[in-house]
Length: 346
Image (cartoon, rainbow, N blue to C red):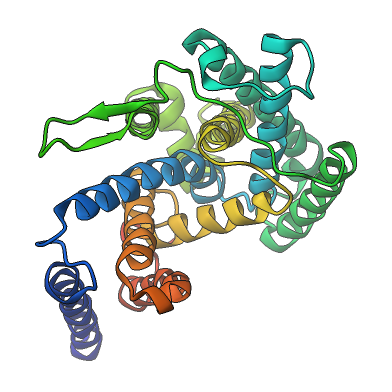
């Protein structure tokens, strides 16, 4: 490695470590509500950041599977999230009340009902994403700009249709099952925390482990990774690479649907939510590195930690600047690791 390049990287890592040290000292000593005098707020913020990062990971894992591994620029990933969210709300209300216009409470929702809605939304998102890939994206594989333009056009069409068919894209939300949506005593200084958010964390861990086993320990996963690096060689070995990529695209799109059900049960979905979640997924994948599932997990946690702690510990008059710190994180990571933390050249 050239001396100048090594110096720049070492300097960059030094800046990152110094920034982290300053942030820790600020949170524990100098913030308006320092962690040493208000541990409840600190632990609550830490858990909020962790569980929000888990949700980021679920949605972004589908994006990194499609964009990072398959090198397909799917800018309609956020639209799949938004479409799945409204479908899930509609299905849940119809199952419980028989009408899509009647709101429901957590006490009316069972765990089985919630998972049925999740499976329906994931399946629909997977089928729509697969149809999009087969009809519009398969023939221009490797043409990133054309794929980006096609999927941006699709996202605009989907967003407009949702606005028209939902009476202006008004905010809608689902409900977690009543047995989950309650506070849980963690037996730490009498501290209680949302069971629903802990459920999100557990579900994200199960999804992450399942994806890792699929990509690293199954033949399909190995073919996907090999096909990205050398598609011609994999095809020459008699593997139907297009069929394998169809499976990967279906799974990646279905993950957007799963994330939509989880996210809409936690917060509402409305017009514009698609852009928010596309941006979240992009930032997570860029920070973690394209094509890395572990990178998506690390990127999701870093992104969530920076945003949540900035909003909680900045002075009250300056909390609106919290979003700036997330993009400072993005800039610093790319300055030190141009391909992301765990990324590598395509």
